Image 1: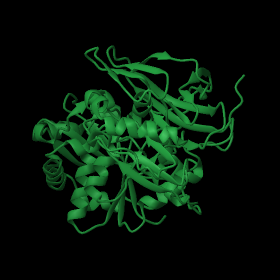
Image 2: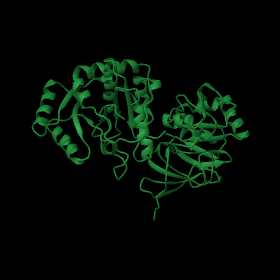
Image 3: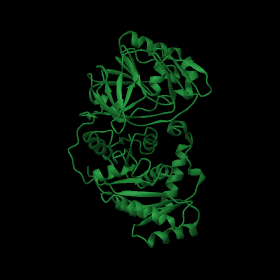
Image 4: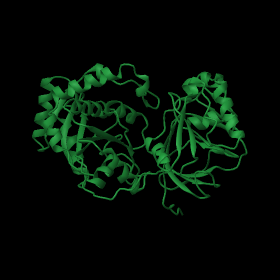
Length: 444
């Protein structure tokens, strides 16, 4: 890939990476540049914001969950027909798996990507220099090329911060962004409120672009971008085996967590993708030989889904005709018998898996996972391996004595026991699959 690329990172989550990235993407587009983007790590929500700004898919790049061929292919695709690519990091710059893989820094080192460090400075004075200097020295194979100070209180505050940094290192300060309540993006329990749910998103993005153009040195930022240093012959990206020839995919505000790379990979294997909306009480296409229910927010719409008889009956008809039904996280919950919402009220779901789940007492389940199929399925033969992640607050109250769907290991390779459920050609779990694995680790 020869497209100039930059990677926006920060010392911690909540520093303003997303708003800065969106502002840069839009500001450069105003200059007539064709902008592309990517998001580091297992995140469904931020890429949808990128896609709204660039009008093109935003892939996720995850150096723990993805094979190198998948990573390289997606990075190559992010730069196709683009003049500039801006990637957004995940959490803090060095945060990832215990060995550092999956982190923004790991991806930057792997492909030689220049990093812009966004530091949230509203409660900092001279201490900002200690933070930045620590990040500059932490990994020699990661190059931080510029500094952006965010949520700065005043010009006087900015001067204090600049003087402290100038006294310690030569890293260029590319500008500072003042505190602006009107640049805030609302959040909920799994992250930002989805782009599709924010009616004023276009206005917020334009304000972010105005602010970035006014306060940052865009010309210098563009000069700092460079093509990835690792040149590879990128393969066609096909993360997961196609689970059918015609795959009905649930897509709306309750089922939004499907990776574009997975869906496009299925298309490249010759599958037709047939979208339908459960919230609109649409049934999966009767021609489909597979149905995919991705994750999302079914717990926020449990009453509507329970009342969507056309949707639920459509799932049952698909199962009866032998289609493969596969649910991830929220989709797994909907394939079960009952979903209990935050208030403790139970809602009947499809009843295709002997599973009851509850959101009444939210508890975070978070982490990378490695999954091994216990039996063969359209996902692959027995013992097929995948990498992905788990991120939910729901609890599994009941799982009947169905055949084992998969065995799961954590990020260190330690067994976590069985996951999910399988009933005939209906299967699912709380895991979100990112990529297949070429081999499985042997764990003592």
